[in-house]
Length: 419
Image (cartoon, rainbow, N blue to C red; front, side, top):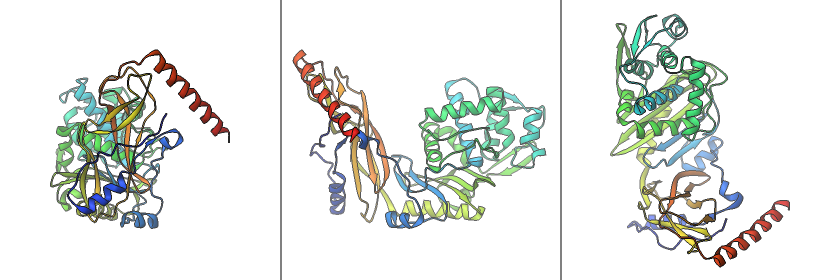
């Protein structure tokens, strides 16, 4: 891998305060070696949160994300694994949304209510349920509403049994799907979040999952905003308290277990900007609603979007091995945006991270690393980068010179690692 600086071409902004911010941001470098594995650390403890972002929350774990760019506006112990409780149902419904999108199942498909799902997740269990009648058959469309609006444990179990034959097999699918979506820590033992040591998620991964759902399944996402649902002649209200108390709120889910405490995933949109909040570990349901609302209100009031690079604009260059050119330009397919505080106090650092040099020949649009933007100690946004041009294979002499250079660098690194 090789190190170099980003070209001097920079986006232009009218505000003088933003020029100052951007000057700090453009402490760019192509980061290599051990530094390339820079950790996405959470802020640990309330005191540090106040110093970094001017905000605190009573929630033991929390994160606030801008859905469009993925910018993290606030986080506190965001990588701490906890019981996700009913918030875990987001993973269950994502699997169903995915199966519907791929055509594996249909909304009109009907699944039987087994004695197991009725007894453990239905009326006899005494927990949240859609009250599906034993041995009846329920369409997938209604099971989704039961899971999302009524937080029905039976709804999820019926879906799991209908799709995978049982909860254990469905839970394996959940874990595999989580890994495919870039969630390396989450584990699942059932479909509904009922207490089990195998159910663990972080607020960061819950936020990633929520962002994926709202961006990938906009039509299905509307289910989270429905205020009530009636099944088996029993009418139930949506359990999300934000829907009735926060302007622009339209999702997602609450959750509670003794081990996990009270938590929720919430989302609201104002003036075209959507924010997603995840909190977990509180002792009181009212505090859950209050803290989620406060965090969302703070985000809407204090942040605005800034574009660092337009789509397809050159962000920097990656070193090329054995090519006609020594480097290749990198760009993003979407605008690289970051949320910044309106008061202009954010200190941002951005780096290009890639494994290189990139071996020729190179085609345009080839994925090569990411651009990461840090706000303080935390990653605010991470955007994939792609090659912006083709690079053909270089001469035999060029390949030999590049090979010799990489050999020297490899020997140097090996020696350094022994020190």
